[in-house]
Image (cartoon, rainbow, N blue to C red; front, side):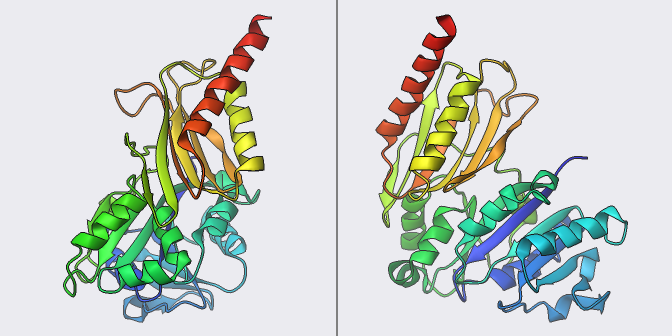
Length: 318
């Protein structure tokens, strides 16, 4: 059975997460979605409730489910998956709404590594809402908001009717050039633009940018890497760079698997086991790794990748 897609909606307090989620659940493209919301957050989905199936899970309009986190996020997700396996709940996607003060990194790590759920789930996208009226001041005052935007696959600009979003949009582009920006008018965004297999189709770019102490860049290599090189590279990153590495994702051309790119995905010191695609998603068949960090040097990482592969190649010849 194919892993179930899971997406995370993050964003600072008052940035419009719940409004976005409420509108998304009315979109036919988001039908059959199970929603997990933190019990400390402002749920605000009462207008969508149809009936409660038990004290933890309620049925929403359009056949979606809503589940409060009453303890551990992983346990909640595991319970949902178990209900689905028993035929007690029907859904094709899970969406997690974080609290406004949440650091999304531990959430992503838990979803990627917990042995009970990691194999059953596939991270589909991380969506960050940013309030155009107060977003600039929020980024200045709260490091959590910077990290939320830096880790995102999609950035949704909200409250654009209250403030000109151009300056904030440019700042966010410098902070996270890999994330497409979408505008939500009163929370309305096409769900198809948010729920995509972004971890499997990372957006690549040439230049790296510096903003809010965050550096974003793309490592590239035209020649295939050896599988051992990839393993050593990720191991070294996890052991020595985890504190500075916010997020990493990419496609890797591996010598031992020609024509089947490896998808790599990591958050700080935690890396999901590589997944393998049946074919390249685009016309470019080369290794491309997007790195979002606080203090890592692109040249050093590129050199490390090349040196490791040279060593592996030399050992294989000898």
